[in-house]
Image (cartoon, rainbow, N blue to C red; front, side):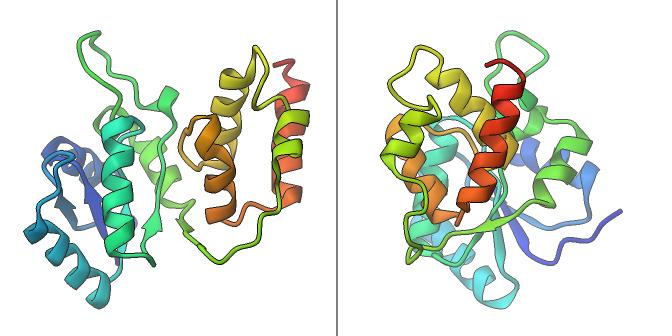
Length: 186
């Protein structure tokens, strides 16, 4: 089983259980989206000594936690699980890391990103429109596919440009992903 040196920031103990089935890693749990100051201080300490990987659910609460922790630890690494790979088996659950397969978790943890707030914008609004990712009837579906291919977590139209810039997605990576989406007829 692969050993992960960094500590993985997750939402809860079910996420921890699932991650430990996939890799040998330590986790720290935020216990929901109201991340306490105490938890943030622990995460900051861990970031200095071992580094951290933020691996939260692909939903509103998970993105909120990701933002809070990213502000506290700007050099954090990020792992994302695609929405369609984190669906609960029961109809009453919500999207989550705890529902992802062991293989999906391993794949997500092997495709890490580090935010680059200084990165230049390589993909502009015109590129997004030409790729039918905004202002198109299929935009949401195409964004979901793009985010899944690039493994950057799903975002809405307003956040897409920022996410692409923050994670340094090149024009070539973007165009390759769009070509893949177009070839599938979406």
